[in-house]
Image (cartoon, rainbow over all chains, first blue to last red; front, top):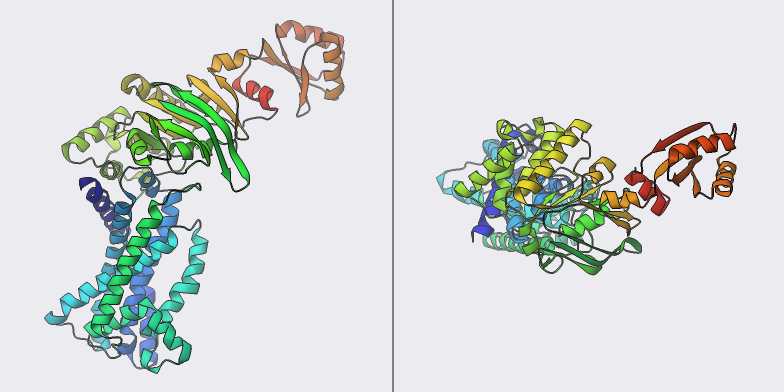
Length: 246
Length: 302
């Protein structure tokens, strides 16, 4: 058990220590969603409508930055020594995903300070559900990033995926317009989009409008998706290959 | 300690290793010498369990690298050509994290870390961020890191890349110490001749094949006597003349005539006399590993 938990714990801790030592990077993750939100929100006089989407975007940016670092870290960095250590790959994947998810979570929580602007009051009853939901969402999106990044050789390819997959996923997640008013194929896309359930989960816990799909459904889909991605990442990382792992 | 048998590796259609076999004994410093692209890195990746070979097998301490990578990883310390340290962490934090990956913790890990840092002269830098260390020091941290779990075998890939000559000598000294005091078997890849000369035994790799193996002295003795290099405006006809007149093997490479011959000093006098005006400059040296490589492959290492 020690051989499983210790490597996972040390990777998790490493993410936090790095984050703390490179605090200025927080700005790049938190600032742009915040600016998007203020521009769209004030422009349309509806800050509340875009609030949950902004929280998800922050977490998504953080997950992207963390998982992009996997590609670099593997070629030249600490991940190299992980690959030749006897620690189970699943333990390394768990540590890395939990670590990166924690960073996304912390950065997402920073934006909760702006909740009053969206007219959201976070009382005692909301604090725990909101914090828990944010962590779950961060965990799921980090898992998504990891599963995409692991097989990639270059960060350039990841940028492509980000612009062609992740950002469009976010756009049809209910972050910009609610599912209720969506048309045709886009509406179907929204149903199939796991990020939709992240946004509606936050809308539900923050008592914002457009909390469809419902809270329970959103929670189950987000958690199920997160666990599936964790398992997929573990499987990908444990594969033997005649191509080099680094 | 290491047994490589008929190892072949292909990347698609490209053959990176072709039927490579050799053995490394316990406590040896064993070198893989060859130019970049010669197959060293592929061999290193296979031995360090980062890649499964397409054919053949490699055993380290009795365990097959492809079938039991986890067992092999417990016996092997790996020093990469590229950096595998976290620059945002201190020396000590890097070592601690590495220890955790190997399931070490508590006072055992602390003792191991202290020993490794002492062995490599890193004690006064333990709380420095890796980002602030010189290239030579970082290499030493890499080695300290690779030794924490007391591996029987240390694999080093181009460990002296990017180091200045002083740091390189220092590194060689540390490697020699490890073998002497810890009995670690060391396999290193290099394209630097000075480093290869420090190995007990070597294989010369070229285009994925072993072209020669043996101790540096054995390899050099393949060339009888001295190597004489002559510069000439017309190297081809000078070489032809030498072959005819001295019955000596003269070859032309990069516009120079190379002759491997016993009693090179006497030969020089004779050749200059025999071809007046044809020789622009002359040099003589004892055979180096580079000469051996040139002789076996017609290509140069560096």
